[in-house]
Length: 152
Image (tube, rainbow, N blue to C red):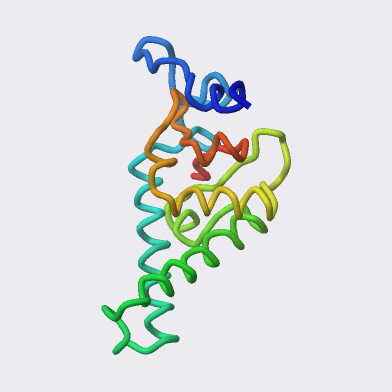
């Protein structure tokens, strides 16, 4: 078990002269299929969260905004609109809008339901996406053997 945790924590140091994000994984330096940057990924997450907020407000009523428990409704909606499309198509609505997709490192077309659920749950915890390795992958990507790449 310590080896499993150690594989998360012992990422190589990010040396500016050592190459580019995704080089160790065989990805191109830029363009289609290159590793997505943090800013673009954060923007996609923001789009997904705002969409979840809007859908939750529409279904539970705009008068429920700000009431206790509404944030849990938003989280639940966000979880669904993120995990299901990533499992089936490889991208959430925010990722599609920003030209991103979640790619599997094991050459599968999509990461599938169990890995998408785990990945989304770890994103909901906030900290795993913030701790990144030299390839720009957070703990949520490392745990699910995935990486977010550009589609355009």
